[in-house]
Image (tube, rainbow, N blue to C red; front, side, top):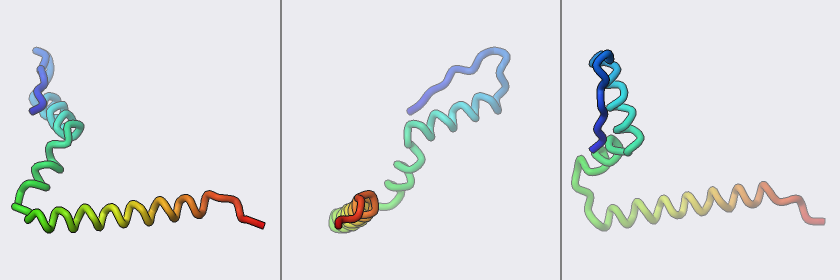
Length: 71
């Protein structure tokens, strides 16, 4: 859990903004949203496999476009 120290001359709003930024950097909000509902292990595997396929297709597209044409 991120923590911040508020100086004596800083307002609550400044401290809140610092805390929100620290939470964003730590990745807490996406983690909470991901864990909000139970996801079956099969659904997790299926989601990860689909992401891997998508990532591989993107890499292949990038590599195909980056090469000079063969003659």
